Amino acid sequence: MSKTIGILTGGGDVPGLNPSIKAAVYRAVDEGYRVIGIRRGWGGLLWYNPEDPATYDKYTWPLDKLRVRTIDRTGGTFLHTSRTHPGKVRATEVPEFLRDPERPQQYTAENPERFDFTPHVLRNLEKL
Image (tube, rainbow, N blue to C red; front, side, top):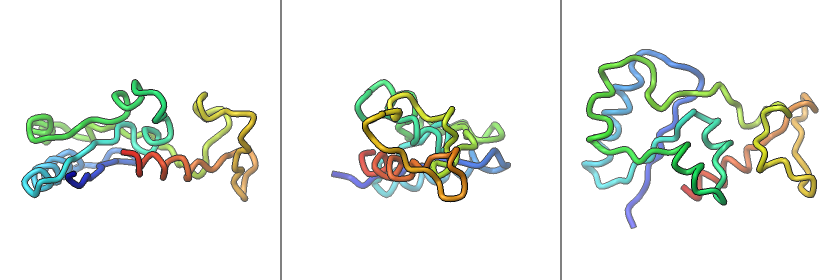
C-alpha cells in the first residue's frame, strides 16, 4: 500500500496557495504518494462522516497532476476554507450525525457554548 498525503488549507485564502498545492502534488506523485485534498478546510474533516460515503466525495478529492495542472492560474485556494476550529465548534454548527444524546459532548474549558471535536477530526484523518 502506498503512503498518503493529505492537503488541507485552513484560516482563509492567501496568495500562493494554489501554486504551493500544485507543487506539493507534483512532487508527491513523482515520489509515489497518494494525495488527498481535504475540501472546506477543517470543516471538511468535521463534517466528514465515515459512515456516509457521500461525505467522502463531498469533502475530499483525490489529487493528481491532471487535477491540479491549471490551479496556479487562479488566486485563493481551490480546496476552499471554512474558518472552522475543530476544538471550538458552536452548538449550532455541530453536524447532525454528531448530535447523539447518548454520547456526551466535550465542552471547551473556556466556553461551555462550544464543543471540542478534535478527537473526531483525528479519527477521520486516520481513516483517510
